[in-house]
Amino acid sequence: MSTESNRDRRHFLGQLSLGSIALNSLLSSDSRGALPQQPAHFKPRAKNVILLFMCGGASHLETFDYKPALKKLAGKTASEVFTKDELKGFNPEKTLEGCRILPSVFEFKQHGQCGAWVSEIYPRLAEVVDEITFLKAVHTDSAIHSVGETIWHTGHQRPGFPSLGSWVTYGLGSENSELPAYVVMKDGICTAGDGVFQQGMLPGRHQAAIARVEEGKSPFPYLTPRKEFSSDRQAGRLATLDKLNRLHRDQHPTQPELTGRIEAFEMAFKMQASATQVFDLSREPKSMRTLYGENQFSQHCLTARRLVESGVRFVEILDGATGRKWDAHGNRGGLIGNHRDNAARTDQGITALILDLKSRGMLDETLVVWATEFGRTPFEEANREKRIGRGHHHKGFTLWMAGGGLKGGLSHGATDELGMHAVKNATHVHDVHATILHLLGMDHEELTFRHNSRNVRLTDVFGKVIGEIVG
Image (tube, rainbow, N blue to C red):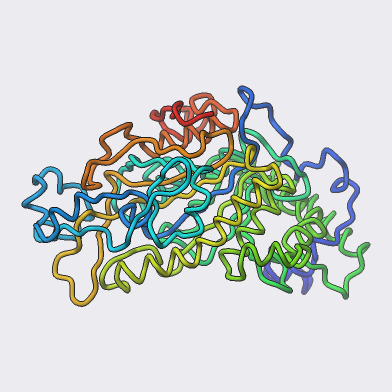
């Protein structure tokens, strides 16, 4: 056996320099690595999605759900205000009975023609509320981080199911054969892990491409060609590897990941030039970079606009993953500093994204979604030491969407006067997923994949389109 055949896989693939491969089959317009566009079930309102996911559970009571009634009950214990049944189902590790009712730690004001209430920690976002559709009665099935993140991304409580982005690319394909259809940019690994971006039982081509936005570095591993290998030599090596992979796949037809591997090689060639250009923010004018800001989240937002402008179907920005930055417990920095810092880090980039998309005429066809795994309790944690904190809360919280065929300047649904329960137009995460697919022209009940003798879908056996918010 040759020395080369004994090298580990990573070193071998690195030598291939897949970005420089010049095989005719990869250059053909119908390359197998591309995701052809698929017809929608009906006329879509949106073409693309940008998902902004705040890891850790952002507090609705400190952001968008103004509850002045909390001030009247401030200091009372949870057991004085709520029944035992109402206090069930939260994080099983926490005791709630002695927790005291806590008003919002920030001031709220109304903004825009719609009069939406927004916390002081989002001064820039408050300027574009007339473009936003707030969902104020969202609820989900768990107050545990990993489960909440998994439900949001896949519609299921246990891992192994396709992510929302994978379902979108499975249903609609891609507008650009030279870029991945589904791209994720993140600042770390979330509690549920990168499994929330997997394709599950769908073909491997629908898995997310996880990119990094860092000046002077390739957005994807092994994309830059190695100078010491000629294009002809690289082409010959990949042709051999491609042939061997296909022979192996044909002998193991029940292993779809083999096809995914082959398609990844094919896509790599196409991405060499296109991905480098799209992720190169120096191509943007200084005024645009100033509008977005210079921190990592802002750069992710600007890159997201460049990606959807280039035909990428689904882009997710994962914020606060390392350390669950939005997890506002007293022993994790405290609610006040936590949310003030997190909002300050994200406010400029989010607002710039909305303004930029609108100025380019892209907001109508791009759905921007701001989400988190759950909200926070209307009472502070018991036995706190030095700082105020709120616990996990999944029975009623807020998320919002903008553009993509929605009615802007609208607040849909409501929690009760204390922000505890979703009481008006209650909206489950399944309903949000059904609505996102609907805006993209897909019927969530028809978008299925046959697996283990049943039709699997994003919304499982649930979900209802929130028709009242659709323009």
